[in-house]
Amino acid sequence: MIKNNIPYLLVFSHELKSPLNTILNLAKLIELSLEEPNKEKIKKYTSIITSQVIFMKNYISNTIELDKIQSGKQNLVIEEFNIIEILHEVVEITKILIESKPIQIKTAFEEEELIVSSDLLKIKQILINIASNSAKFTKEGYILFSLSKLNNYVLIKVEDTGVGIPKEEQGYIFNPFFSDNFSHEKTYESSKLGLYITKELINILGGSISIESEYGKGTKVYISIPNK
Image 1 (cartoon, rainbow, N blue to C red):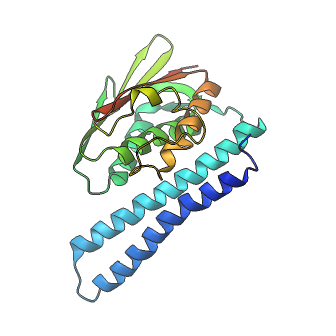
Image 2 (image 1 turned 180 degrees about the vertical axis):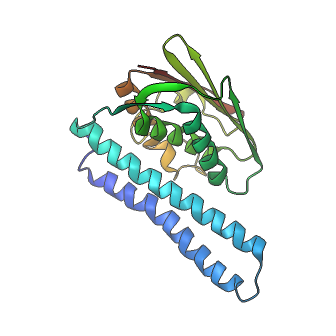
């Protein structure tokens, strides 16, 4: 069990400390920029602050989901909604998360509207976790969101041109606190809990997730969720 684990509390505090320090430093830079107003600098600083706040909010959401999963308190709240709208929301969040990196955000949806009957909040958390990974580990190129349907399933693919995952490590990426060997990326929360929680939420929905990745070239994440 991860719950009530002291090492997890240390990881939790470390993961929040970094973005909080970033926000504090940027707030000071904005204050200095106001003396000699520079709209572009201020816009850049506020964009980074927003991305860090989203990161912290998502990290806290994952922690709450982790507690529910391990305590067996996960309940499904089934409702009808347009999943295309949810994907567009995630796309806008991804645009914020990439900050000023030269990354193109692309979409490929077969329809403008696709009504599904599922747990909206869990699906949104799943998609934000995957998008956050792509934004963190992609330095340039593109992130592509695509959606299609097959019988009673909704099929979602998130493809990026990021750093990728070595083949020998791909069997462990859904383990809690999986930590890869990328020393320059090691502190990101997405490689520690995000994918583990994502898979658990998809299992609760009765769906599946798989990943294809080539180190140095990018990653493709495939999500299948029943529409019922």
